[in-house]
Image (tube, helix red, strand yellow):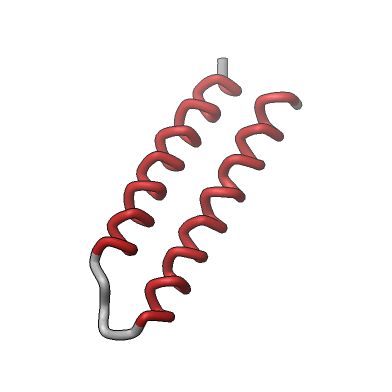
Length: 59
């Protein structure tokens, strides 16, 4: 049961971070490269959460 809760919470977090990354690209700041740095950071957090969810789900 705990693995299922961790998996559901991680899916929700990935959805929120995906929405934030889309908002980052939508809202074009003055610096073009700053947008891509923020997007890369958010997507790296997404990947880490997915790997943690898979690890906890199968172990």
